[in-house]
Amino acid sequence: MQLTEMSVMGFRTSVTVFRRPAGGLRWVIIPTIHMGHADYYWEIWQRLRSCQAVIAEIWDGPSSTGMAFANAMRLARQRASRDLVPQDIDYGALGVPVIFPDDYLAPNADPDRRMSRQERLAATVMTPILALHMALTGDGDWLGNSPLDIHDHTEVDRDASDRKREGLLLGVMREIDGEFAAEDMEVAVVFGALHMPTVVRELTGKLGYRVMPGARWLTAIDYDEPPYLRKPPLDGWMDW
Image 1 (spheres, rainbow, N blue to C red):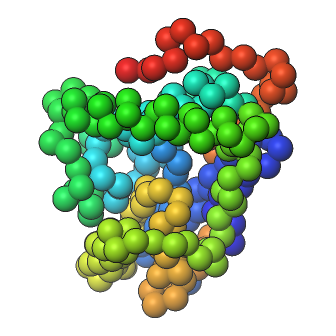
Image 2: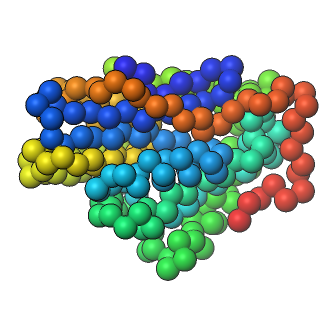
């Protein structure tokens, strides 16, 4: 099954529900990208409102990685760079239990969900390096040239930290499944798209879940204008 799609129209991610044939607990699998349009993250938040619990990546705040990539795309005058924002999903406003399996990587949470000074500095340093890399692709479409089509069978190179994070994620999912398998409830998993092939294989393999019909697709980044018409200004490119 396909989890994300890169096309001439832009980049989309799926929202897929898994359930066992006998019913009970349903898993809502939402692969994400760390930068996109604000309404993309709003649609994810709206879908999460019907869930009884959420398993999410790192922490409840804006992504410094997404900020660096979005700013770099604007600085390098990349296609589809307009109106991009870092990933920012206000999980706390959902009013349901939210589990961050990889919270050992998280910065200290700011009461206002703002990035720490250290994260901002890291994004500032990363931005020109990423912009130079994007500019060197030569055609103004670094994103479109990236391998962003991800399926459940996609093999992803992961370092030890990524494998540890996925192990923690799967461990939480197994615990929830063991306790609530018979319950009529939805639990969402919102993680970076590269982690999701492992999640889907776990669900459809050892845990015995099946894909329900009616997968939904959300547009994270769109190519609504041809590249020769899109000229992002350099003034104010750093979004804080």
